[in-house]
Amino acid sequence: ANLLMSSYTPGRPPRKWLVDRTTGQSKYGDRERPPCPCCWVPPCVAWCPDLCESNALCQLWGWIGCFHGSETARFYCLNTAFVFNLCAMLLTAYSCLAISKEYFLLSKAAFQEYELNDATDRISEAILLFVGLRSAALNNPNVGAVVVDFVDFCDLSGEGIERYVDPEDCNACQDISDNMVISLMISVVSFLPSFFPEQLRMYSGYDVNCIKVYLTILGAITFLLNLNVIISYTAICGQSFYDGTVLYDAQGNVLPPDTPEGDAFFVMEISWTWGWGLIMLVLATGLKLVDLLCNCCVPTPTVTRDRREQDIYETIGMQSLQDTGGEAVKVSPPAQQQVQTRSPETQQSSSMVASIQSSQWQKSQGGVPAVSQSRNTDGVQRGPPVTTDPSPLPDPYV
Image 1 (cartoon, rainbow, N blue to C red):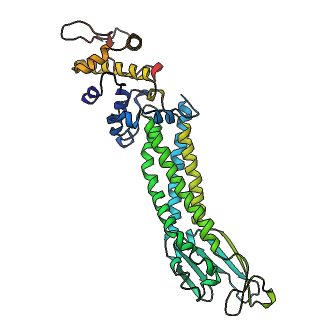
Image 2 (cartoon, one colour; image 1 turned 30 degrees about the vertical axis):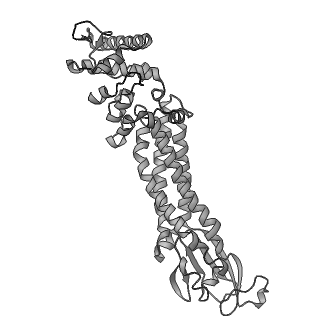
Image 3 (cartoon, rainbow, N blue to C red; image 1 turned 45 degrees about the horizontal axis):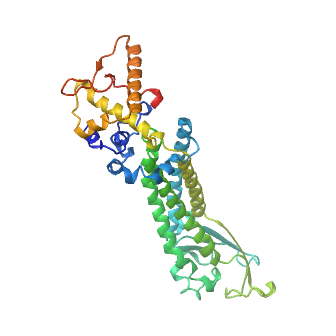
């Protein structure tokens, strides 16, 4: 009650509809609310509504959408978004295994997998190369399994690594390694702050403009971080490794491309495929895009932008506070002035709502509902009679 009374300021937009969303007391949607307080609107939104909620940008973005007034569309869109967002986080977390320098993890979550087969049959088994985000794992039947850091590619250019990487591009992967690792780690973490707000948006009685804006910005950041990793790897690091037919001499040195195959001691056919790490990251990025679009397609409720609907909610909330439990709630002078200065249209709407409440209660109880009237200390009635029935708002305002 104190929080509500402090929200009344003469000449300012009503805020009870917003305060109730921060305290879990919203009267819309049959009083259904998110499962825990972490999913309610943050209190700071009610403290600074002009900055966080009621500015023109937030209201415009909240209005944008394809399913105005459709609770069915809200249910399916936002539940789909939540599931896709969860799956995207798990897939992105899996791709983080490519940061490891362990051979086993790199072989399961590499971004690219290379297979080298000798056309001359001098090497009976294929050589496998698994490329991650900080190192590459090599499985050579003649040498065994070994992991080489990107930072050592140039230092080992005369000791065998040049057989797989162009010496002129030996620094390509190392130059962007930190960028890819940091982007991927931030991306995984950025998923976590989105789960509670996405549950909040599933309930139209608690949805607000600023939460939609917040999820849009956060989702766009996550999507762009994943896209940065994909493009950086495929366009820079992945292009530094040999591909196609490569000729070697007896010492394993790469021969010029115009050398006849008959002069080569080894003729290696190099083929590559996307590793599971890159596949999972691409899938996660696609799912995150769907989550972002679902969030943008669902508009916020009209009460977040309609001043008249906010006035009606405010008037009903004041009367409910005065009559709940049969105990009168003292209203501060600013609040009384705010109620008394309502427009005739707002007072008429309030009277209509009270009449509907009284009629519905009487039909359900088979009797005449108790009526409570708001009076000042001089005994003069102020405003229309209001029932003490604590039922939620009637359907026309839900």
